[in-house]
Image (cartoon, rainbow, N blue to C red; front, side, top):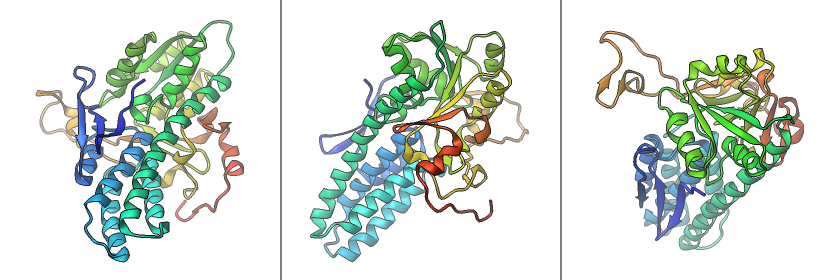
Amino acid sequence: MLYPVIWQNDCVSLIDQTRLPNEYTVVQIHRSEDMARAIKTMIVRGAPAIGVAAAYGMYLGAREIEAQNHHEFIEALEKVAELLRSTRPTAVNLFWAISRMMRTAYETLGSVAEIKQNLLQTAQAINAEDLQTCQAIGDHGLAALPNTPEKLRILTHCNAGALATAGYGTALGVVRSVWREGRLERVFADETRPRLQGAKLTAWECVQEGIPVTVITDSMAAHCMKQGLIHAVVVGADRIAANGDTANKIGTYSVAIAAKAHNIPFFVAAPVSTIDFSLADGSQIPIEERHPAEIYQVGDTMLTPSGVDFYNPAFDVTPSELITAIITENGAFTAGELLKYHPQPVNTADS
């Protein structure tokens, strides 16, 4: 099993996902600033993994604070939190983990040293809980997928595997559970332009475990569905609004539309922490826009002529009506069941 974020030897070890699949490299992170840089540059990526990394980043920042006064310590820690929040605006797990760490700091009675120790314990708990959560998501996904006389062929988009979590994965966790039970024939992995997470990361994870995988370009998904090659689509999520609208890697919306047109079930696999009940619908989800070099350049090779413009949103939002079910660690729910499952006040402003 891959573990992309590990606390060991008094620092955080990250698998450098920007170097895969050609090179397996582990980066050691000792400072909160370095963790923020690792999140922003996608050394660590995937909403759950970002949340775990941010939690450890909060502890690393706390460890650097010299203030012994409780109020001064909290003020300094808030600055660490703000730095980490600024790295990736769409992945809600980042904000959830930081909020949980801040709550630990505020609620800990005792010395600053005791607060720091509790922060480390909370980060380690977030790490362990995410691994358990992903395994539960995989098992609930196994039950939610269609029963077919033949083994399943599952399409996924981007990487929502062990590399995107504390281990096991969300969408790819479902695939792992299906494979474990002997019900999987093959994974079809969209390459996922422009950063090619499907071709580089999902395919790499499958190869490591001997899971049959076929990489296709993003534009081939609808054709494969029409040819009867796909039984179900399973994707991850970076943020889910209260009504079930889901933000995931750019291109997911197109896959959902194609699945609907071909009557193929479309599942989102994500932990409950990815559901942002403060947002009424997907129109309120902030969409990160990344540097255009991701589109026009591969290595030193320019792909486009000079003088053209670029638009590079990292995510799109799939409307809830295109989603068959959202698979969480507590079961699979339709979009309409989310609020019943976890009712909270919903921010309807500007919706």
